Picture 1: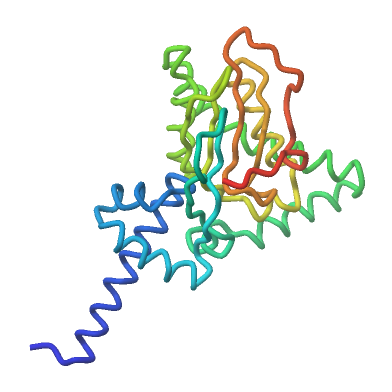
Picture 2 (picture 1 turned 45 degrees about the vertical axis):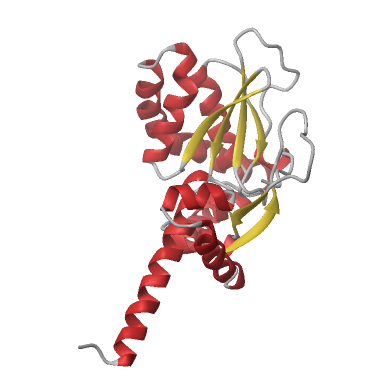
Length: 245
């Protein structure tokens, strides 16, 4: 027989575990509606709303208006819930301060200014070189129409919780998590190097529309269909547009 205090503690632990599953589902799939979350975590919508209320109160998630691509339908856009910076930090296993300190050292050791920026950019490209080879194997093994999806799966293995979806005249590669987001806030060369790698792997110019490091909910990269003309080759992270979803 459990004492009342033990029962309450067990209940509280179960509640925290379920809220973590709800937050993790948002991390893995991006900003989500109550209906989407209920389906994924196996709860009623009422139960999900209760957990979301607690997560909003704890500044783990925040409600937003759903991003609509293409023609807007009648009625108000659905409300979605996205992770806050605080919520992402709870899942972030990277050593942010160490990474930022190291990048500052690289920049200063190279002389600062433009030389320092170039040194950080060279480091960012070198860092991604080994990862890119793994991604290349996945992309090359896929049919041309499935390459963006193959890249998304490879990125997910590395902790980026990536998905691919259709978009007008192309596709969008969405990364719902970024292990180096805090470092990339100060050093956009990390995002720029990643965008360059995507372009080389997919064999086409790509456009970075939004980044988590820039304050957006998702890192979004546009990949045009083969033969589609685009006026922008690569949009760097520090010029990416805001994406409220």
